[in-house]
Length: 150
Image (cartoon, rainbow, N blue to C red; front, side):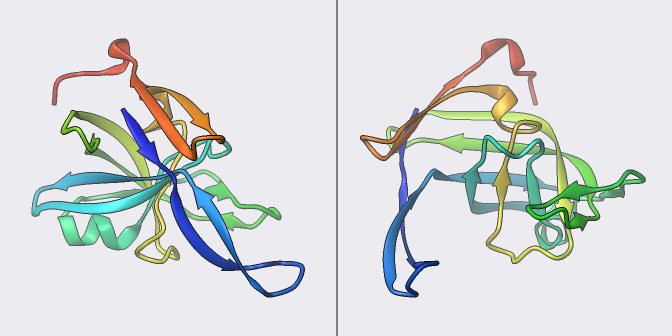
């Protein structure tokens, strides 16, 4: 499965001028008791966990359990409390190939509704990923041994 990077216009940290940044963001579908929601997720090899806004769980009727551990540690050491749940996630490419799996994921109350992080647990553990910088594309190959019927 191949996904082109998304083009984003952002302010340069150095000058404040608008610059173009390409990111490995892919469309995914998250299922819950009240239906499904389509979101864009940033594929992040530096993230241990996959994290969704808590609003996604609420909108889909997904019951989450508040974690008792330290939560996630963001850049700079900020602690973010997380809840968790088992969810069904699907990804499909432009050719119509689709993969669907059940994953343990996390939810954060302070995330903007458009912020979805696809880290190792819940996402990258299910794929072999190749980041093709020259082509501005992400190749995902499913790891068959990681899937269970859902």
